[in-house]
Image (tube, rainbow, N blue to C red; front, side):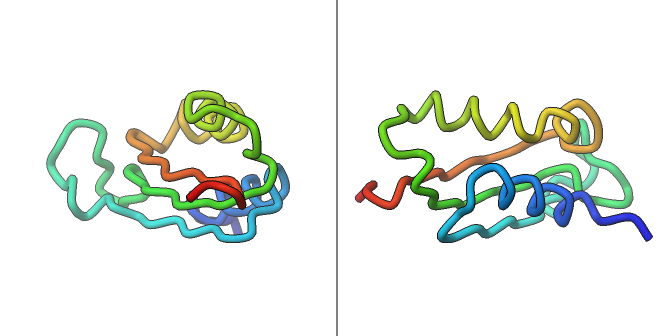
Length: 91
């Protein structure tokens, strides 16, 4: 059985960033009928993640790091990704 898009992203993010906190929210239902929305869902996501590996990285660098790890998903089923990324030291 293949993993869902969310489960695949979770595994990749955990392996790459060893997050202290990770929440992946499927927002696809809020975009039904919009461009990029797929009937089966799993096309629009919000990710909240805290990782020590973001320490010293700018907001842009954090986003770039996540986009690199999720490049396959962003090139395929994921149409939109909202990111809230923090280091352990980010207020």
